[in-house]
Image 1 (cartoon, rainbow, N blue to C red):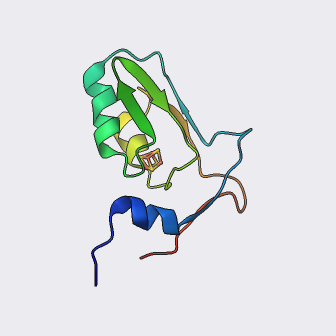
Image 2 (tube, rainbow, N blue to C red):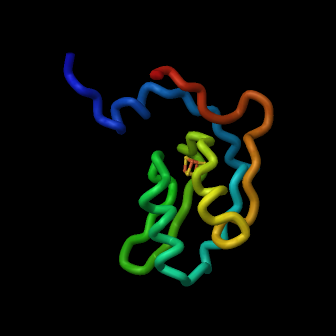
Length: 94
Ligand code: SF4
């Protein structure tokens, strides 16, 4: 059996997104590169990006693992909640 890439596994998941109510609020003006790089490396869904000094974030592919909350609560991550109701990720692969 061929080994699946992370992108292939993520593509099997279903996401219901609420584009008006982000469940994670981050401080995109945060300047400590070391803190930013921690999140870029740790987020399994690659929601955090840091390219050529520009920090960006999208909660739309979030796997709700909570890693960023643990790593950077009250620093970069200002608010972290589970999405409301049936919004969010639905896993299809173990
Ligand atoms: S909760 Fe997990 S998947 Fe979602 S943004 Fe944070 S680290 Fe990434």
